Image: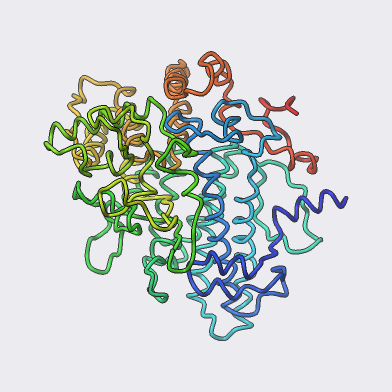
Length: 532
């Protein structure tokens, strides 16, 4: 193998870990035990602490992917737009294989960590008598979750990517891996989740050993595995399975020993999901802890000024202000109060004329900036907002969407689920008459709730893409998908978007040139096959 090829592959899959960098960003002291400049090879695995260190590094690299998760999940959907030049290629559907925004190496670093744990953790039991089988199997469950989640993100963005399930630790491995089909990757994701759950070792909760109380929400649990499976099943149109796994969370016993995530019912407590975070509603979120000196880059991404990297589109601002007006009309609240999920929750403004807040210059994303004090001046002192991957409303809407797609007999239940979230947000229930409705109307109701509940949480593009993938052959849902994207996008020409999105391959990203140029077995997404 040529040196250039080895260099590139090792950048993706090698495990050279710098202890200083890890300790500065750790969620727990057990991150600090990583070997200084030592590669995690088959000679590394001697103790349970070694396994825990690599598991921890998987979460560390997962946190590093958050800027990518936000960009991929939002910028093509028309609810957020970015002022960064690098982002323009994505939000304007003008990507090429050379665009840096297509880089997927961060996700493969997480996959690499997971693969190494799955390969070597069992052997540590012969080296460390204190490494019990129950602990080892719990570590495997975390590794299965990390690998499966990353592959689901890759599927949603690339459809087909290399499926790597072996640890890359020496020169004997075959680094030239072709793309696997979406069906093959989804089968692997589901197999990983089922293997973890069937082991019986996935935890419901973690002990608070560090005093910060983050682990039950910030490490993979049984609930996180259920949520991931519900997600992949909906994506794959496995509606009964999606409902089944969503119900494992939604219908779990509520006794004192269940520890299952629960929907926050109180409208005025909605913002507690984000501040202080790790709420009962959370299923899995990536944690930063200011008391450990951790900071993310949300300060530059979301600011209370025109300089903010991410801004809401006019389309999104209108939707949010309409919802806020509806809450005000129902609750009689003043515009400066926090009530529900909109003003001073999802967004905030200091516009001079508060009745025109939808067009104020400082209309900004507030989920990652605000505190428990409803005041524009009270922003977070540290940039340590968590990033939530799954919370209970995900399961509610996954179930609702699956019920819609199962047929009219299930629409009444789907509508009830949508209305649970609307009422929690301080809104009136939808007055849709199921017997007089149709599938598209019901699906649009669920989609709208996805949009409003999860604005700026990195999900909007995938919700729209699912809509396109539901097409029954008559083109109606594909057209609706295109119309939704066009209505929201405000950074390029409508005609260009309509032209690009006629090709389903353009719904996905190109395989990065840095990968395909050194791997002769990789085939480019056909839409970008002639790109340079």
